Amino acid sequence: MKKHSIVSLADANYFPLLEELINSIKRFKESENIAICILDAGLSNEQKNKLSDKVDEIKSAEWDIAVPQSKVKEKEWLKSQVSRAFLPKYFPSYEKYLWIDCDAWVNDWNCIDLYFRACEDGKLGITQTIGPGYKVTSKVNWLFRKLAIIKSQNFKHAVKSGINYNNSRKLAFAPHINIGVFSLEKNSKGWETWQNNLKKTLKSGNIFGSEGLAINMSVYIDNLETEFLPLNCNWITSNLLPKYDEEQKTFVEPFLPNYRIGIMHLAAGIWKDGKDMRIDKSVEIEIETLNKNKILKSLRYN
Image 1 (cartoon, rainbow, N blue to C red):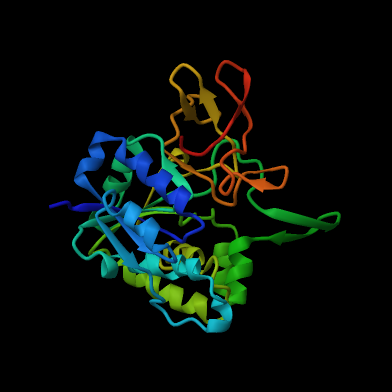
Image 2: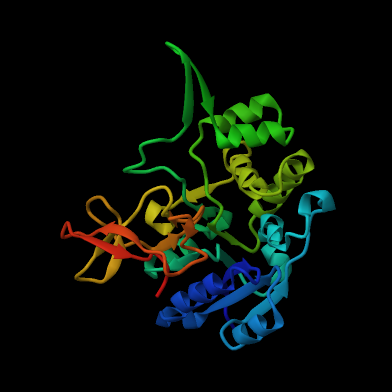
């Protein structure tokens, strides 16, 4: 009986990315003891049949919190903004859950072990989007001399969602938490805390990003106990490009000691000539190697 599960979600458009994520997991021998569970947000029957011998469970994603249809507009993939906060409901047989967005893939198994260790004793295992090499943490519009308008994604979304100003201000300068990769135990109180905050954020705010705001509230306002993992456990390529180790044939962090990237996450896309690498696998960009060469390479799993 498998005790741990890796969960993701996709619609028909993102199926190629989902398949690459699954393949990147299953190439590791350690994956034999880990269940792979998929939430279906618009996959075709043909796609689900193709997955049937690769994954343990496929369940249809639902609107676990009521959302006005005017906000949904037939975008079934938006269910990911709600359903991931209810994973024990969909897949009740497991003790620990590791969520990985389908536009991410596993490059090194050590980070998978870290996530499952991180969520012990009810803690949330997750990364913050700040670290070595990050040159901008907040956007600023300078008005006059010392006067400026500071833009915060969390603050703006919190205010729009009807969160009081006191709590919104607590979020304004807190390092943003990306919800694209996280781990939680089945019996963690974190699920309930997250769900309660998600109900608040969905009332007035946008659906997209609501679950991320809710988890930031859970950590920074409700003090959900959290194990913060290093950036290479959720390397967001749109924030900072990795380097490539030609000898080991793997992606690594761009700064010493050049740790191997654990999970490569193409959140927000990598764009070239108006094409998004997530949609068009032929897109290649210039990457620097550890030997200081420049090579053209895709960041998708091959």
